[in-house]
Length: 191
Image 1 (cartoon, rainbow, N blue to C red):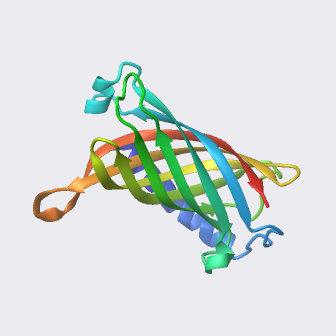
Image 2: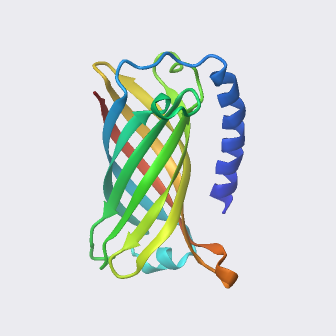
């Protein structure tokens, strides 16, 4: 939960910065779509049931996002929306497959990349988390990261998310059942 508190504090700071950035929105890009395949490293929180279950305390996965500039949806300035899907295949330490798919909104904190090289952002994703042996549940993934522009319409993204998987509690109230850290890196190609 300490990671979640840190992310919430970062989100509040980001909202303040995003408000200032919105006053001077970055120019609209010439291209509105970015395809980004990525690698995902899942780290289990110490002391959780999953951390005790897996000898290496982590799992490797892969995914892809299709980014669309927020102006297409009349979203706040300097934002991008993505549809994403990621998955973890069955491994020796995990006999079942899992997938996480849904939507994500990234809010960039600066009007332009800092020094033309680093573009920090806050992120919030939500969607369905599916296990081959356990059904489908709602999950959210707040996070933060940086985007590094590469000439010729490419980019490198480095980001961290707290994945929260919910279940129905007493009186059908949503309760966080599992949480873990996701570290992602990927190359994006704008077209």
